[in-house]
Amino acid sequence: DTAVSQTPKYLVTQMGNDKSIKCEQNLGHDTMYWYKQDSKKFLKIMFSYNNKELIINETVPNRFSPKSPDKAHLNLHINSLELGDSAVYFCASSQDSRVFTPQHFGDGTRLSIL
Amino acid sequence: SQQGEEDPQALSIQEGENATMNCSYKTSINNLQWYRQNSGRGLVHLILIRSNEREKHSGRLRVTLDTSKKSSSLLITASRAADTASYFCATDLYNQGGKLIFGQGTELSVKP
Image 1 (cartoon, each protein chain N blue to C red):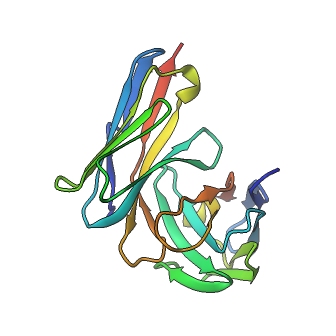
Image 2: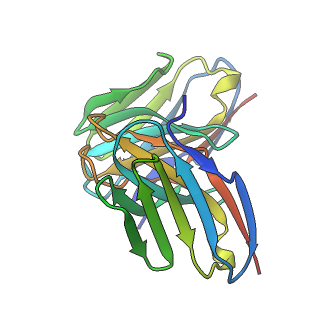
């Protein structure tokens, strides 16, 4: 059973399009995250939700909008895609947002902008 | 700027040898975590060391933490080809709601 699952695994699209990435976790965790990993493997947090409430919102263009319909799901919608958005996007979850809780990652969505 | 920096960026060893990776960070932390990433996969949590701990073991993994030097090391003993992966340190900062700051990673290659 996959603990944190993301769809799609690959996403190839044209500049200017709007796309969504979905994430679901079946671990019963309260907190979910979105990370962006660039071509040099540098991983940076974008957003975090705790029980459907936004708690971390890094300096991310407002073309990126996360949505959490319930605590098991955190989706990421991206408007007007740009070349620089090409990256691997990882969803993760943790038991809660307190310290000492490791994060569990999905296998990523590889987004390529043509 | 990045909180964590790792050294070396790449490491190539033979099976059976030990592999040591280092991580340095800049600000005070609650804890430091190490993760592994196999090619094309997500990160997998390996070990967490709290700021008041100096050393922790898990199987063939040994992690040390020196808060005075703001550094940590990950030692993998008796490496195997299956240990080939990228290894990342991540710092959990005070009052940041679980936000992890990742280092740039060390790419480990273990040759059979």
